[in-house]
Image 1 (spheres, helix red, strand yellow):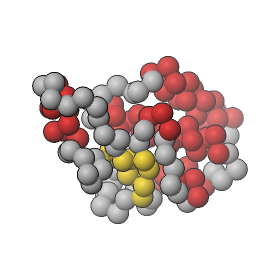
Image 2 (cartoon, one colour):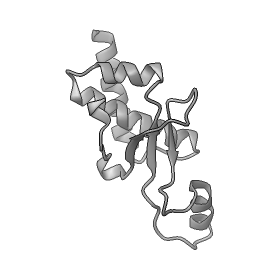
Image 3 (cartoon, rainbow, N blue to C red):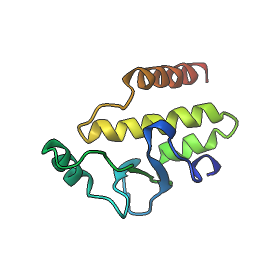
Length: 119
């Protein structure tokens, strides 16, 4: 899974790593070891007690069929990058947040749709 190794999602600030504890889920966002729990961080930010957020970790279930399918597309690094960012934004949406850059989220989604139609 070369596309996953030590990948940092740049401006969005999340690190990506493989995860064993995930059962049926594709991905989840977790706090770094030295940071607050993600829910506690939100509470502290809303109370004005925390200025900046820590960079979350995007844990990916390498055994999930979707992740395996993304990894199998070895000849298209831009597709793998788009898929990684879409997974990151998906976890943010499921956590009740907005994608960090809604315009880029929509563009990535459109590119993935276009690729799936061509395949």
